[in-house]
Amino acid sequence: MDYMPEEKERGITIESGVAHFEWKNTWFNFIDTPGHVDFGAEVDMALTAVEGAVLVVSAASGVETQTVAAYRKLREAGVRTILFVNKLDNPDYSLDETLINIEEVLGVRPVLMTLPEYRDGRMTGVLDVLSQSRLSHSESGSEEIDDGWNVDDGWDNSAELKKHYAEAVEFASSFDDEVLKLAMEGKRVPPKLLLRGLRELVKSDDYALCYAGSAMEGYGVRSLITALTFFLPEPPEFAEGELGQVIRLRHFKGVGEISLFRSHADMERKAWPAGFEFSRLKANLLQPVDEIRAGDIYAMRTPFETELGQIINMDGTQVSSCRSPSGQGHPLDHTPSIRDKYKPLLQTRVECLGAEDYAHVEKSLNTLSRMDPSFRVQHDLDGGFWYLHTVGEVQLDVLLARLKREFGCEVRAGSPEVRWQERLCHAVGPVENTFQLGPHKISIKLSATPLEGDAHDIRLSAEFLETAPREILAGVRSALLESTEVGILGKGALVGVCFEVHEFTWTEGALPPMIKKACGDAVIKLVKAADVQLYEPVMELSVECPVNFAGLVTGDIQSREGKVKEIAGDGKTHFLKADVPLRKIFGYATGVRSISKGTALYSMKLLGYRPMSVA
Image 1 (cartoon, rainbow, N blue to C red):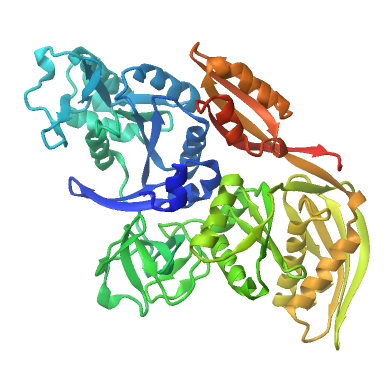
Image 2: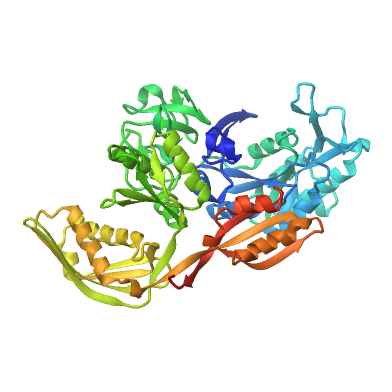
């Protein structure tokens, strides 16, 4: 499902891929999400449109840092999750050790529902706990139930299978009184009754059904997909009058912009709003359809520009506020929360090769920023260039590659710099600033005080609030917030600040750019370099490597001003966690690959910010 050249070159998923399939009279919309931390926003948006998730844990490496992050996202979003332990076609990898690792790291009790079967050192099938059956490959290569195998015949592993059935009964008995009664009486619990108990168990945050096998070899997949038909909830009840919701934006070369759209209604082509087209999407292939069904995901083209999280009415009109899928409860506006969640850690200056390309590059960058809420563009109108604010280096490289390949934009990009945080050391002001253009004049009296945390606050005088039109109030708020993105030292955003507008006067007919200029100049006049303290981002680095490279890896981290805070290992593999300044970890992928001869695995996440003096 990875179709982008950047995905194939790097061997990672960048954009969430969508596919569809039917299994045992159940229609599935399957979304394959990225695992790389730079593209976490893709995961967040996908979670707004699913009833359940399969979290894959590699038996080769256990629960990795990105696995923990994904599991937390699923828990926070309330998405029902089933685990799949992969890569068990290699008998050197231990299922038992992986299950212990899952329980220790994720804090959830895995309830094993399939286990691998080996003969002569290779995987030959899986044993399904619920059906007490053996699944092996047929001559055609498909995974099918072995009719000649019976758990009561004393075959190899039959005792192990009965043991896990008994464990499943024990766990399910906590959620079903009839299962508990039969278990206490020592009577056999039939599969149908156990299934009912497990359906209640999967709703608990303390347990997770766990399937095991090999995706590459096709073992365990049949049991997993069957489990999804049993244990995932039905789609929610959607509000009447809604056609559906935009869950993602995409841009395909030669096609233009499309919206990934979750339908809230059943509708045939003849009833579609004018100018709307719907297609099935597999990777980047569009297959037109003649009807849409509630709960399904489609590629949608519209006569207008859509936004992430936007609700579309049955008549094709747009709803400004987004609601939960059931239409009940608090408003659901996904995009602002995602933009707030992902802090850009890097900033890179980008400029056109020719002045005639400016408008095209500007439009293309705006399109990319609409598609990815974790990526932001800062425009410098006076200098005629842009700053790209990205989560990490990989996201930046991909954006620049897409800018050239998909949009045909030739740009000159500088080296990425760490995006610091700037904080006020003390209260400043008030100051007064005036901006006049022809007959129009704007004056503002402004002061600022520091706040705890990263939030901003803007306080307007009572007189200003009572007399100013809504568009003037909105213009002032927007201009002041935009000025914080630029910062004072040009190193990063000014955070944790409260602006107080004591006075604001304007002449009738003053244009929004004048408000922006007056407010921006007031902030520059108000806050000086000596009034701010720089804070640099610190990353938590997790590394896993063979023990013979442990010394080299540790020494390299310490040379980067890293502080090792946790070390573990099993005699074969060395694990460590360290806090490292982001400015010292550029190019770490190449460095650690060279040191460990390509054997090390690592992941990073933002730990926080620490104060640092200006050089």
